[in-house]
Length: 300
Image 1 (tube, helix red, strand yellow):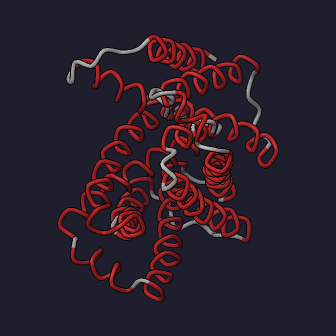
Image 2 (cartoon, rainbow, N blue to C red; image 1 turned 45 degrees about the vertical axis):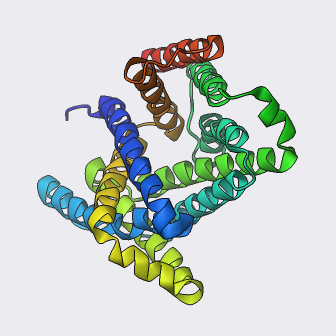
Image 3 (cartoon, rainbow, N blue to C red; image 1 turned 30 degrees about the vertical axis):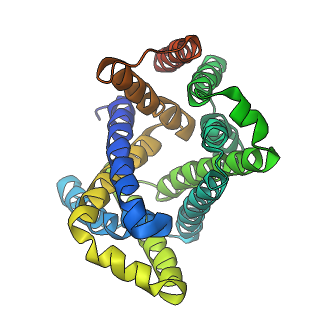
């Protein structure tokens, strides 16, 4: 059979680009829907697209709906809830006007993914691969700390703690989603990845939607009313998830999330070339470290 392992590389890069587009749409909806409503857009409007993609992939690969055992259910629920908690922690920390600190510490996610992946799934990453992950993570952290360092120093320990915890929950989500895919056993990796995306989005839609209906029903109504723009956020969100999960099905989650850091690099290059902003020495060092880390990762 043909070896499709290499596909994790374009899938991860595609996911990073789609995620950037989804984030832009969610930011534009925040003032209208609030942070909770903008977050629900990702799940509620992404689920139908994920379901359609899963159906197409099953037909294209000739796969039937996989048997979902207890491990799959537990892994998927853990991934879905961890992702919601991570987002909540990140937004809570940012309310304290500590955006720089939160961004910097959540970017430790790839290192945490590597650790959780080894402990939970037994993923083995070569020493050179681990070094690449650390170098790229340090590089993106330098770029995230672009504004004045005094802001980070004066923000206190709480945003730092919440940023680290958010990164940890994002890491748990990545590892447990990969665990869910692997737990499906034999079958086509594409069908397994798309099915896991669909189940994860369904859980998130129900959990967050139920909470909103009980405590903030007017926000849920506004989410439904904003369907014209929200549907594009859902589409890009679903496509981003498909890319990430396809990567998870083919290689260790740490590799996928590290390569996904190119999203930051793309944004920085765009800022330099389109908006003609001059990069600082710290940004330049961070960029070089990201490029070096990603290059090392691809050579492993």
